[in-house]
Image (cartoon, rainbow, N blue to C red; front, side, top):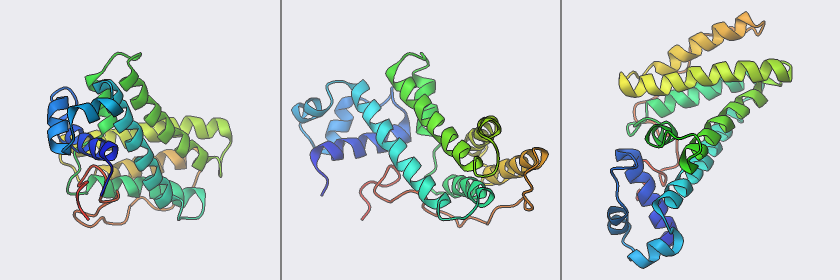
Length: 214
């Protein structure tokens, strides 16, 4: 059974992902987490501190899942393809509802806002991971430039997947990525991703998709 602090985080993560940040009040989180108001404010003195903590935990979950999956492949190209495959599986997860970090940046648009900063740091971390993977094949400078372009393709796939309910958005993004890599002298050799199974979980079941599932 999760401790009270974790119960608050899990509940808030589930509610924020499903409904957004401004619309969900602290009282609802307290009620659904089954904790006292005093307990909530003991761990999280403000809603901002709670959202920031939730996003940081979500970032850790995201990067752990992505790096674990992609890291199981050998070679930069296979790892890059795995990064897009991972996103394809996420977009085809039955509970996919967009990106918590994109939503956070949209609801807290001030670049100096703590929540916006955490959202930006997450996207930078993903871009850095892609760049690190590319450095196995190209120079640091080229890797940094390509990583920025590949991240934009992935972000576009996330938004397209949500707005258009497009289950093939990541596959389309990979085809564009493969052409981009080929144009930079990186021979890919394949422009398709393995087909994802419907409702295939990409995150651990205790995370935002169903935190109470055993």
